[in-house]
Length: 151
Image 1 (spheres, helix red, strand yellow):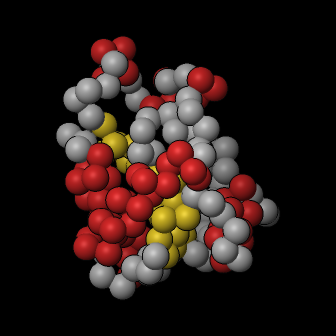
Image 2 (cartoon, helix red, strand yellow):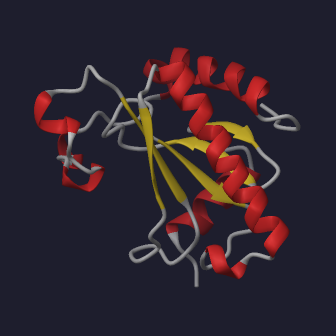
Image 3 (cartoon, helix red, strand yellow):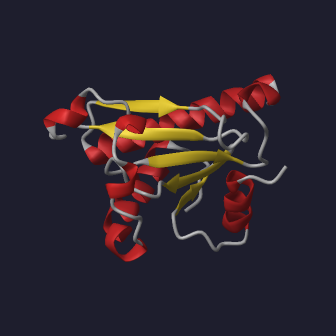
């Protein structure tokens, strides 16, 4: 089965995905599109697998460790008070982790909302020129938090 996750990982491998932040031991750290919450990112495994339980113990721990370290990056760069993590795979049956930095300055109606309750159609679309300064800050932080990562 080929999913959007498979296609996106293929684009990352070919160097043609503009949302690219870093190559990690377990996969790819990328910006989300749309930016439903400022700084929304994903971690995509490489190779793509159906779900977390399809990974061996060591590879699973690497993926989860990379995910938490990406959360550290988002927390520090975005000034987040917490990171919401999500892995479902119901629509795209391929492992991928969503990371949402949550901040105190969010609109009151968003503070307690889970990300899928937000209006994704009204969210800013990822724009490589507009988001370049944030991407560069995230990339610098990746080098601090994720030894072995490449930008």
